[in-house]
View: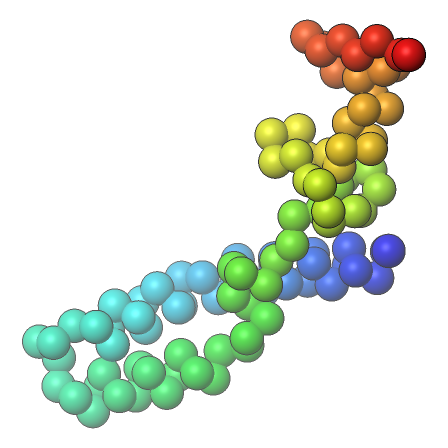
Length: 99
C-alpha cells in the first residue's frame, strides 16, 4: 500500500511541475495565427512530456488507509475509516449509532 501512495505522490508532483508547460504548448498548438512549423513543434514537445504527469493518472486515496475504492471526496477518507471516525465521534457534526 505504501508503494502505491508513493507512486501517486510522484505523479501529482509531476503534474504540478509540467502543468504550466502543457497549457502553454496547447495554446500555441491551437492558435491558427501562428505559422504551421511552430505549431507542429509545439505538438512534438507535448508528446515528449512524461505521460505520468497527466492529471488523469493521479488517484484519490484515503489519508489514513490508502484505499482508493469508496472514497469520500469531501472528507478524503474511505468509507471504512469514515464510519470508524464517526462512531468514535471524531468528526464534528456527525453522529453514527452503533447497533
